[in-house]
Amino acid sequence: MSISGDLTKEEDANAMVEKTMEALGGLDILINNAGSLVARKMLSEMKTDFWNKVMDINLTSMMFVTRAASAHLAKNSNSSIVNLASLAGRKGGHPGSLAYATSKGAILTYTRALSTEFGPQGTRVNAVAPGLILGTSFHDTHTTKESADATTAGIPIQRAGNADDVARAVLYLASEYDGFFTGATLDINGGVYNM
Picture 1 (cartoon, helix red, strand yellow):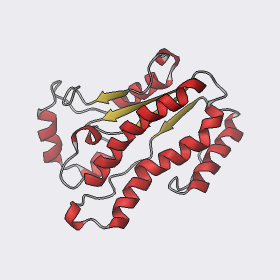
Picture 2 (tube, one colour):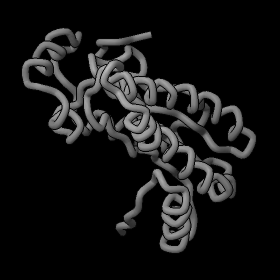
Picture 3 (cartoon, one colour):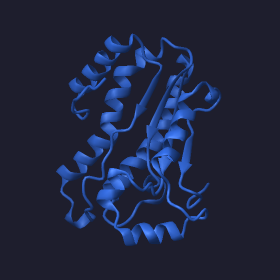
């Protein structure tokens, strides 16, 4: 099944959820994975439109989709939302990622706040904050080989992550095995950042 739309537009987000409901007959799990750095821009060169675009893609779209899905998720007393954040939201990111890192840090707070709001309806809300995940369009576009090599050298387990590392974390958070886990963030970064 494929549904296209611009999730930064509320009407498209609402339509996506409704089309999903029509096709699947219900909604138990929501994975909020829309996101983009867009481009690296320092504050001194950043226009307000650029800032708003990054916030709309990474954060506002998440709010639109979650709001549209919330009543459907409430029908299942063991539903789950998994929000994709980033290590940049914890550490601030590399130069030129101010807007991106800020939006991803906001997702961490959004996740904690939403977990208290949605807890009574039986919906768990958690986040995943990936670090360097090679082979993704994000890092293929925005991370040089030199930067990836330098970052990998500083990772305690001496390797970059891959899509399977993130997928396993998302699957766990979406599953019934995550029954008493809400408002939390799983840091998928090989130990380069730990709390």
